[in-house]
Amino acid sequence: MSTKNIQKQWLWVGVVIVICILLSAWIVFKDSSSKTDSHNEGGHGKAESTHADEAGEAGHSEESKELTLTPQQMSEFGVKLTRVEYGSVSQSLEYPAKLIANTDQQAHVASTFTGRVESVNAMLGQQVKKGQVLATVFIPELVDQQANLRIAQEVLTLAQQDYQREKQLFDQGISARQDYQKTYNAYRQAQIQVQAAHSRLSALGANAGSQGRYALKAPLSGVVSQKDIVVGEYITSDKQLFVIDQLDQLWLEFIMPSEKNISIKPNQQIHFKSLQTQNRFNAQIQTLTSEADSQTGRLQVRAKVLTPAQELRPNLMVNVLLQTENNQSVLRVSKNAIQQIEGKSVVFVTDHENKNIHFKAVNVEVGRYSSDGQWVEIKSGLTDKQQYVSHGSFLLKSEMEKGEAEHGH
Image 1 (cartoon, rainbow, N blue to C red):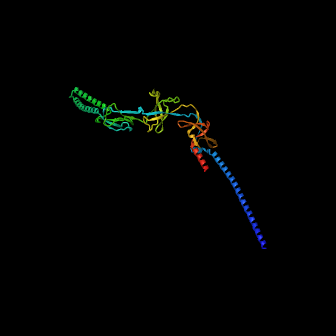
Image 2: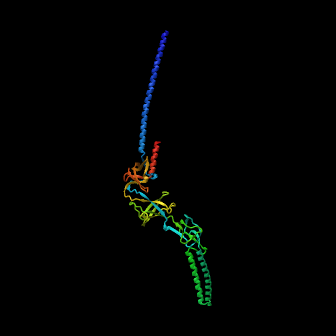
Image 3: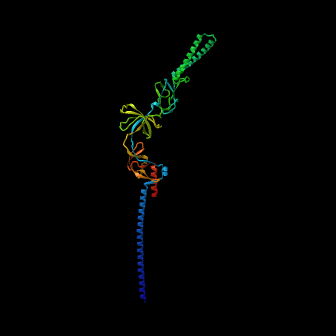
């Protein structure tokens, strides 16, 4: 009996072990199937999600090329519309030129007398006003002239006294008419001598009380551009001591270009720029000289500077900008309309729908830029009379890029 019991026990143990193995295998197989299904479903969902994201991004990319604004928003953004047109895109060529002083607004200051310089009151480059004393010169000749005036005044005083006395005696019937007439003539002659002495001093620019000192004064307001006088030197009347220029009225001179497609006419306005600062200024053609330049054999052109500036000075070298005559008409837009998006040149064109206006960035191929910075040639991408944004395109570009950034975030 004990042997049979033992055999039964081992049999049940075997059955339990088999059942455990089968149960374990079933559990493992079920877990693997669940993971496989979960993986497949997850992969499929991810693919669908990725496809949806790509589709969404593509939709936004397509959508980001356009903006829609109301008329009120256009006014707030400062957006202005213009139509594409045909016209010239003029170019300018640069030629050397020189600024010179306007000789019609220039003063040369010299001494009327020969004398010794006592003081100099104006320096080179100084701004002076009309009537301002530039220098003082001691003039020996002026001392003689002033002495002659004093002598003539003394003679006049004595002659007046004699005349008044003789007139009184003549009125009383004591003095003869001949004596009265003689004193009157002497008195009148003394008056004439004094007036002549005053006139000489006045013509020389001096006065009776200067004690031989002669003041050199500025005949007009301007800048001292030349100075050749020092204290203590002996000067003559033929020496030029100061040159005063009015720098607000300079001239521009250059040689007439030989190019046939450049035309220059009197009263024509032109531009020139400083070689140091690259700043641009305006001038107006005045004359074309009647004689050719001795070195080049071409005519010399003179223009009046219209925009004075502190940096402009006589003898300054500049470049004059002359427009070429180009009759070729090309498709053009305002330079302000060109923007750069993703490294490409674009222009915003419009499409009206009810009260809203759609703006679309269109890729264009640009050509020449006009020298005045106003026009750009369009080789492809736009058509004639097509409406585009001429002002405010940069704000539209910013709004478009802002929308793309928000969508990416």
